Image (cartoon, rainbow, N blue to C red; front, side, top):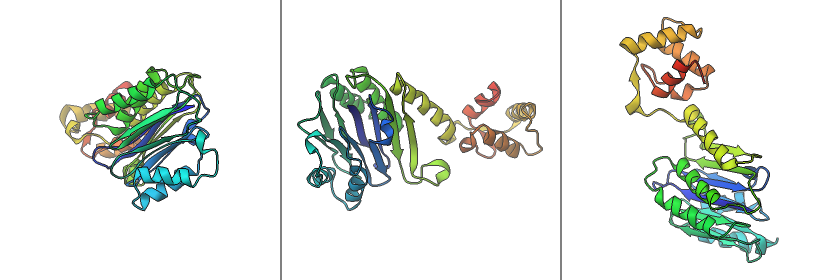
Length: 278
């Protein structure tokens, strides 16, 4: 009833899950991840206990394959209807599909990824997801690479019953909001006619609001740029002798505080300021 990709970034710093389904709020049931440890997707008559169990096992140093085998061996429920994918801190991912999962059902795995789905339009869903994941090796933003694979599965037909929800979860040590969390991305589309497309829209907003600026693109707050920023801030009710303070005050209201760097301005922040706000 679901298709997903569980993966690790090439440098091992990020772990994540992207999933879509004809199921209400799939993000509340399928994905789980722990920074520097791994990620898991449990689906098809999902056993939600797999999530903490898998992360605990991975945390002991168990491989993804060993973790999947342990989950199945310790499950006293309908294992033949279960499906699960796991990646650890290193090595190959692993996936399991019970032989009584609703067709089409299956999965594939490789170095740092596992892809699986059930009640799909056909095997092409998984194959296209794998091809997209492998082709995206040069994508510098891991969360976008995950979402690209999910889009490929959606275009290949996805869940044969239709579309309803999608989710994206990415973790990395200290990479969450304000550096105080390991959750880099946690986005959910619970009920939508085109959830994967909506998830893409939300990720673009997340990028604007929560990603930190690229130092190479920062514009010094001097000369004509400083004059323009000061004038626009005054027009927005944020006049002040200290330009950095005035800009930070405005950015806090616009939820752009993660993109503020003293003495400079992010081009994306300047674009929002020029447009009058988000």
